[in-house]
Image 1 (cartoon, helix red, strand yellow):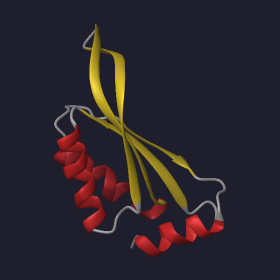
Image 2 (cartoon, rainbow, N blue to C red):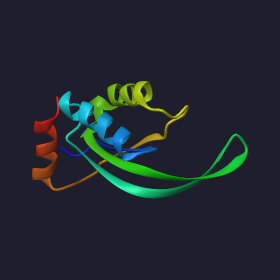
Image 3 (cartoon, one colour):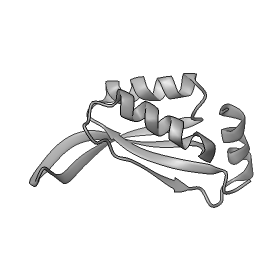
Length: 105
């Protein structure tokens, strides 16, 4: 079962945007769950150091859903270049991985 699932990480400028996008992904059964948390970001943008209060999101889903999720986030995200990265889940509690599979299409 391991190797079929991923964690996607992205950020949003505010809680409302994060919740709206996550709600849509959940309703379409593209993701099983997401964890939203406040973060302080420091980064360079157009050769200038920026600081921002943002919301980070960990998304759990099937690997086969990645492209659809990436497209949906890009189309609905207010940032010009949103952060969207993912990691393979190499191992995990088998019951949890089964739950991800059952909750997604």
